[in-house]
Image 1 (cartoon, rainbow, N blue to C red):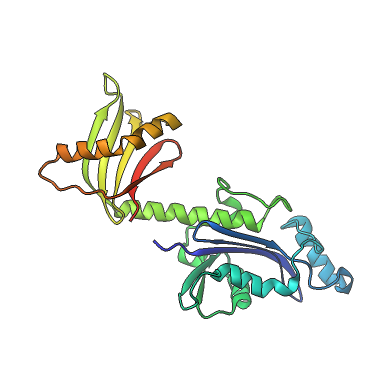
Image 2 (tube, rainbow, N blue to C red):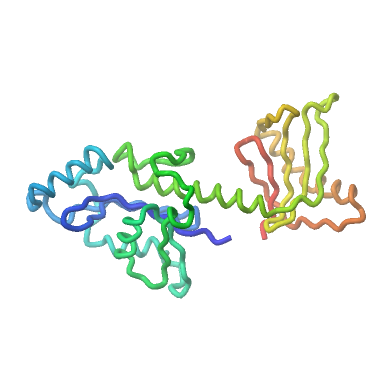
Length: 266
């Protein structure tokens, strides 16, 4: 599955849009974060422009006009370079997501690159909540401000998109084989092993009880399951001798310390 690039911008509006902070997350792992210097001295701003900039600093993003270490002259070149990536082929049409229609126009003006498709999450996913209400789990702030941080926002929208993709792919998968094993004499707690055919195709191993609770896994338990993955695979094949089961190369992902899933690497 191709992972889009996610971008968030913060800045000022003084006769024109001024980028102050930019955060870019590519492939879900390559992160770039920049805070730019001001394009002109504070003294050159009009009274109304100073008022607008001061309001944004006090009540919106908390960034100051004088903040930043990267020269403002590098805004377009640096943001374009981080969005495209130095190793990418320019002929490859890349999908870029940003939240907010105005910021989409802002980013499109900065990039001005026909090899990029800039879309808003609001258009493609109408059920997305405001940035303020999105989950802050597994995010970070840059330390310059406590709210509306571009760095935190880009993680928020990436995490939201990732969760939606997992839910969508899980709905597409069809359970082919399943077997539940009791972990206690009464069968109150159990381990269930199932093979789902997609895409994606994966072996799923949830732990639970009959009240609907999930059991947390210690690191030792997880390592034990991972080391025994081939025994589990052989057990499933022996259980269903009339069906050919091929799960391919396996890797393990631990989801929320309450769920184990072995996925194909290919």
